[in-house]
Image (cartoon, rainbow, N blue to C red; front, top):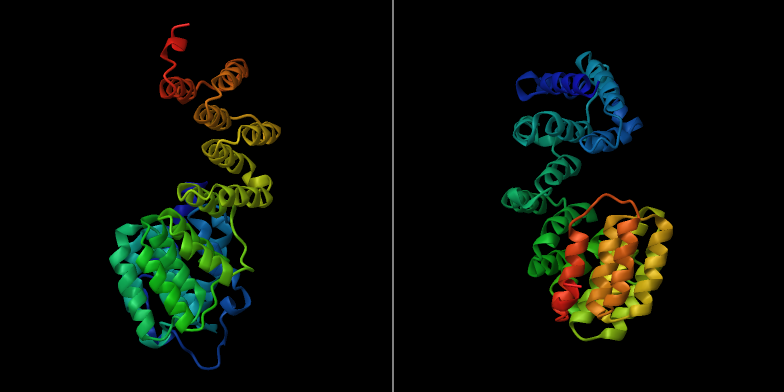
Length: 341
């Protein structure tokens, strides 16, 4: 079914390739308003279709309807329609075809939404970093940098690369343009500051953006940064803040991260406390590996052994990394003799 659906998507996408676009049909006096104006979810549906989080068939049906109405000049196409087509073409035919389509769009139709769609594609990974930066510069020249989204897209690209200077430059430009950072902006920026242990910049940003909603992963990285700089109390405070952000969807990975950092801090009781919360959320190899590693880093090998035996009897699929974690703990503490017992 999915293969057939993607084939249909491919057929639809090819119908709107550059060679099939009639620029004169983009505007037609007396036609109806584009259904995109009445269905703003289409752009989001196409953007997420590649992740299969949105029903592809549903997006396709809406697209087919839009295509038929467009070919019969029933409504006027708007830049938002072009933006959604860029994303659809990329999903089905790839980035190069999406770029070719972008080049065929009349300059009068290339507004903020169209450029932002292409920037979204360029900022997915650092292979297209140069293209992303060039397009961002073009958007700057056109005066399109008046909303957080383009900045957030670039921050999402720079954040994993720990490009501290680029992050500072983007934040300064946002301030100059009177663009208020949103939650996404804040989390990206704080992740970069934490990664390079720039505590001063991290705290300055926090103090000037106190209403932002932090993600638990951001707080974990900030706790690590505090610990690395020797600010243990601040690290513990940030870990407590992390616990308040954990929800049902994030319980397991968040608890595993918390156990790891509590272990690094040396808080044995907190490791066990979080371990109980993790078990209530359901047993997993990742959880056992995290708690054994945390207890080993504290030096509580007896506790690590008890939990290891619990894992052996628990019926979970075998994971060689778990006994290896225990063995690494013995070696780190010079307890090789224990391995022979």
